[in-house]
Length: 182
Ligand code: HEC
Image (cartoon, rainbow, N blue to C red; front, side, top):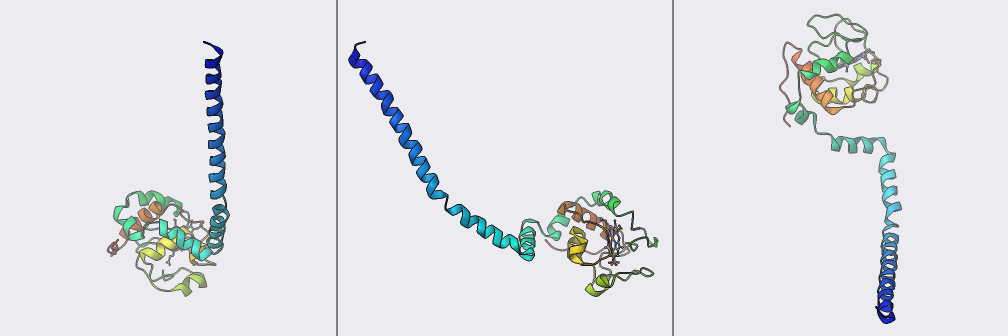
């Protein structure tokens, strides 16, 4: 190899080095252009996250409706989930009220009406029947659904656990309700 060829090789090496530099500079430029979009996006997130109601509705958007979850729920698994409730509730027909009221037939029952149980005014004031939807909301976070309720239970975070439990509770009744449409 003569020195001319070495010069060509060195030249080629230098060329690719320049190319690499150029590419990395281009990448920087592209990145720098993309960057300003980031703060705007974060602010949008903060604004919507600020408000409890809107973040709750965002969460609700992601979770399938109780009707569609019930349609595929493992109802038998609901009995296991109910273990979290037995410290305070019986569910058998004619069972006693404990810390909380007996829950036989609670799905479809008018809220706060189990004979012989002293409910909080909060739960009495909500009124209406325990629909699948209301139970789903209540059991997600009792204190959020009924602010001031005496039910000292944090809530069931898993949507599928709630569906299984509510489906199973519905069957613990003289007159189980029809599962709502999806
Ligand atoms: C630490 C005790 C405790 C635990 C645990 C508990 N509850 Fe309760 N529950 C209560 C009390 C007390 C009330 C009455 C609340 C009120 O009057 O505000 C209640 C009320 C209810 C009601 C309303 C009943 C009605 O007649 O209107 C439902 C439904 C219910 N609980 C379901 C459950 C389920 C399901 C679980 C388990 C996932 C559970 N609870 C866990 C204490 C408890």
